[in-house]
Each structure stands twice: as structure tokens, then as C-alpha cells.
Image 1 (cartoon, rainbow, N blue to C red):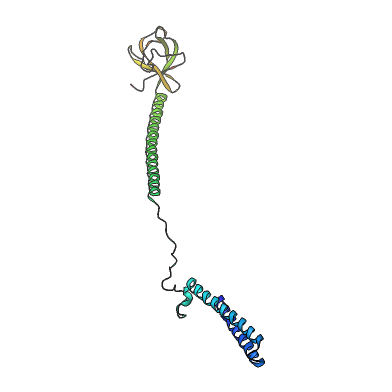
Image 2 (image 1 turned 90 degrees about the horizontal axis):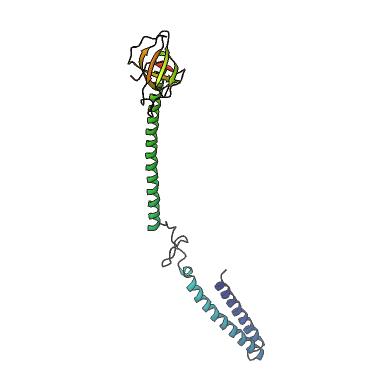
Length: 231
């Protein structure tokens, strides 16, 4: 029950009470001073309460206009003239946010392109290293498979003289024939045959540069004399 209904009920009760007192006063005598005083008090109270009731009704009507609409209106439909609560709104990013998003996208795209370029460069470098390794292995294999022509017995770098003993199955070589000196799997230099000594050993001269770009090669006893696989 709202406040207005309560006050209306209270007013009705006071009116009934006043009527009862008036009726009681008529039984005791209309001109009774007690009845007159009581009736005057009740009348004042009723008028004051009625005024308060009217003021409260006006205030209630202003603050609750939907209570004045017809009862046939659905409670789920907002009364005409009242604002409808807005639904959830979708916030759109402002221009600054859009700019930052685009900047991040551009940076990400640039990083992806750089990573792709580095990957391609790395693949090329790996392929080049693979080819170099293949060529080096093939060259080492050629050196290893080159026919053994003899073994170095002595070498003098200052005089550029090499003396080597030919292998048992090695063919004879004529002067000016160029041979190579092998150590392990590599060639350290080349020599030019000068002559075949009476002892059966070959006397040769070191060739500068070539496999040893800084001068004569550092040929040592025990190195192997082979046919140069590179011609």
C-alpha cells in the first residue's frame, strides 16, 4: 500500500470518528460545550490532513506519472513521453587508436618481410657453403686418389731443391715434368723435375707461389710426390 492510499484511509477513519463524536454529541445535546470543542478539533484535523493528502497526491503524480496511465497498458511497454533506457553501445576506436593499430601493423609487416629476406639470404649462404664443401670434398678425393709417384727424401727451401725416391711402380719422368707434393689430403706445392740421379733418385726444383702464394712451399721429408690432379 502506497502513502497516498494510507492517507486516504486515515482520512476516512477520521471522518467516521468525527461522525461518531458528532452523533454522540447530538445524543448529549447539540449545544454541549464538550461536543462543540471536540467537533471543532476533529474538523481542523480533517481539513489539515486533507490538505496534506492533496499536496502528497500532486507530488506523487509529478514523480510517478506512469501511475496515471490506463491500467490496460502493458507493464513491459514504457509509457508515452518517458525516455527509453538506451541499450548497450559499441565503442568505436578513435583516430589515435586507429593510428597506433596501423603503426603496429606496419611494423609487424616490416618485421615479417625482414625475417623472410634473412631466411632467403641464410638459405643462399647455406647452399653456397654446401657447394663449397662438395667442391672441397671432391678436390680432396682427387688428391687422395692421385697416383703415388714417390717419397721426398730431402728438401732445401733456401736453394729450392727437392730430392725424392720414386715408387716401385712409378713411370719414368723426363726433365721439365711438373709434379705435385701431397701432405695428408692437400697439395702444398709443386716441383719441376731436373734430372734422374745415378742413384735412381730424382732431383727437382721447387716452384714458387702456386699452392704457396707467399713463396716456395715448405716441403718436408716424407711428403708424397703425385701427379697434379689439377693439371
